[in-house]
Length: 311
Image (cartoon, rainbow, N blue to C red; front, top):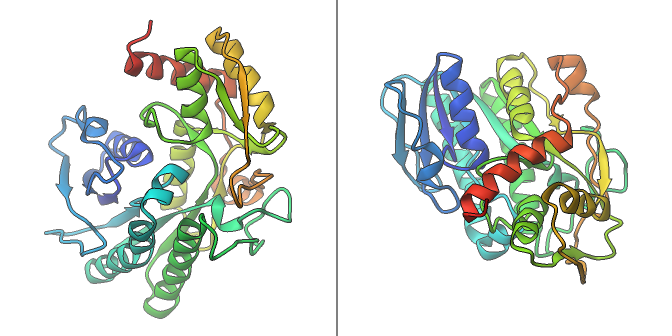
């Protein structure tokens, strides 16, 4: 297939580029580098790979045939979407509209990268795809949560109205090489702080929970979903749940760091629990995560040490 990957120079987008190339497809990565980095795709030396710098909120222009669009363009960490709220809303609305327009014009399928954040601060645990969520639309995180909720609604409208073969993946916390050092999410925060001997900043009392899925596991689930006949949302994530405090102690253990724990106020609307129910992914895709947290963190730690220049 000829596959367009919006946000192709981002953390997950670059891993998707690799996977699709390894499966023999032609890949066109599209990115405006607002949060992505050309370094993430610099190693993809293949005649079947190309990169186009475009802001898809303003339009997408692709010559030639297109078989599938993997729509991953969006700021995705609180640091980014709190600094770029309007751009986040635009890419969720206008960018998704443009991507769907391209899919319709080219007769292509489209997979939307949605998020566990559409569940907000959940009142149901673990989170299933039929849960409608508990989202504060006017809170500081609303720009990201509602952008993704709107994007899901638009994807389903194009599927029902125009018969486009659409997919929706709801991504739970993912980590791995190519995360930005100051991404703001828990894995790069703790890794960078531990390696540099800085205090590990824990927001709240550390009792809130998260689940962590290694990048290659997530990409495998997404690839299977792309090839499936499923059109309704599917959670992809690791259901093993850890408190933030447990995770901090694990990072200390793996890095050998003497970093102290520093407790900070909990940000507004920060979810207290986050754990995917992956029953549908198991049933429909035959997928479940394989990489244990310690193994994945070891690979990630090596990447961060290299980036920080610390042996």
